[in-house]
Amino acid sequence: MSDLIRFGVSLEKGLLARFDKAIRKNKWASRSDALRDLIRAELIKQDWTEGEGEVAGAVTLIYDHHRRDLLGKLTDVQHDYQGLVLSTLHVHLDHDHCLEIIAVKGIPAEIQKLAATLRTIPGVMHGTLMMSATGKNLA
Amino acid sequence: MSDLIRFGVSLEKGLLARFDKAIRKNKWASRSDALRDLIRAELIKQDWTEGEGEVAGAVTLIYDHHRRDLLGKLTDVQHDYQGLVLSTLHVHLDHDHCLEIIAVKGIPAEIQKLAATLRTIPGVMHGTLMMSATGKNLA
Amino acid sequence: MSDLIRFGVSLEKGLLARFDKAIRKNKWASRSDALRDLIRAELIKQDWTEGEGEVAGAVTLIYDHHRRDLLGKLTDVQHDYQGLVLSTLHVHLDHDHCLEIIAVKGIPAEIQKLAATLRTIPGVMHGTLMMSATGKNLA
Amino acid sequence: MSDLIRFGVSLEKGLLARFDKAIRKNKWASRSDALRDLIRAELIKQDWTEGEGEVAGAVTLIYDHHRRDLLGKLTDVQHDYQGLVLSTLHVHLDHDHCLEIIAVKGIPAEIQKLAATLRTIPGVMHGTLMMSATGKNLA
Image (cartoon, rainbow over all chains, first blue to last red; front, side, top):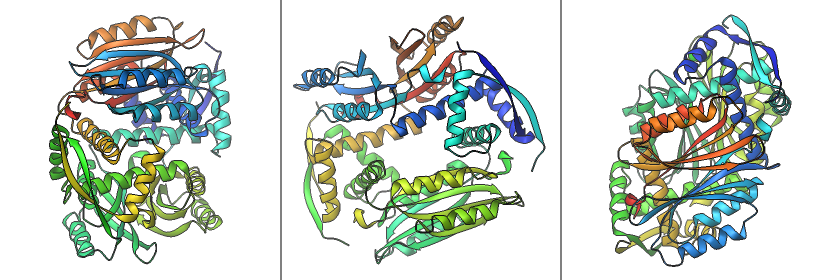
């Protein structure tokens, strides 16, 4: 963990009271803890918007594994983008449906292209991209 | 404006450096200023999710004003929900299309119902709901 | 209104049944009506992401009008970006707080810059950008 | 796969042309394919908003594994909610940071509570909830 720096913040009394209430409700350990989370979420949003530097995330797909050629195509695409794909989790939701979560790391634009390609493979019922960070820039 | 309260926050050195950079880039006047904005955005998100208390916002509609009965229906719906509608701004985008922005104040669930009703009036091409606050709880 | 073109769509029986239920619930007039709305929302999302061509939208601000210099700065910024600002709606929420909605039209990147500049003026408590379309591309 | 039903849709000529362009760009196989995706995304949004019925999703966490007690707490929480947790994927991002993706299935409100609890464990740097479906309702 990096060194901690302490600094002062001035906030309106009423706003601080509401924030303290939200801190208790969300079970944050302290004001610093809550503010750290808000700051990190803001920085991650900027990282994805500006598109520079490395980010991490997850592509989640729901599909029917009986669909012909689907599994082959899913694997092909993941190999085409193998520099981005870290690891994959596969869950059998029921007899027909699978949930596949693909952990990714790389440049935002490339990850978004991979997610778009996976999402439109015939048989994929829903695909989403979850945007996070590599951690390095948040410490 | 309410009284200001000053308190200390501890943050990792590297994280604070990245935050300071974002503050300069977004032209926030100070760390307190930036944190105040992040806190308010978080509280507004919670107000709309939890659904208690009064919020404010705006419904924005794009429509073709030539569409038969459209203007009458838009007015009818706004009168049905007149407790929520504060004021309306109408802009002529071009010969056919209008942008109408309806300022609203009330309980989240009722505002969301109004927005859903407006959005599905035939001839309305796009409708969105912008969620904000009445200001009272943010001071 | 442009000419209508009729084409056939094939959908899974169960999915169509769920969609029909959602159509009734949201009071869309027909399947075509509901699909038109989904298509337009998707195109608008792409217009804002790709950033080419003209879009329309609204910037919504909540602020305390007692704050010194605030009104002057708000007006200055709107004049700096006057090519984008179509019209402004001002609502007095209570004794202290104002809701100001600024209708805008232009290139996505410029509108986003205007929204970011307005949002960080000291005294502005919350600012959001609502993304819509000029209508021209949706007809 | 369920039976396919064919029905007719009427759309404005210009809007259909723009949609066809988007279909080619996003590499959807056909209009039916693209509309199916838009319909499913809309239904999933409703499932999460209305909160009835079972949904699936993924909670993604970034954390520093050196943080004392963190791993124990993460495991404790997942066991407290074991009815929801399907499986977990763990990736070592670098010497300090981990990406953990938890596949979940259950009632929206419970999944959201689990995500909120995980997100505020001290040492968790960023947490997000990705909302998808079990597939059953989308076929």
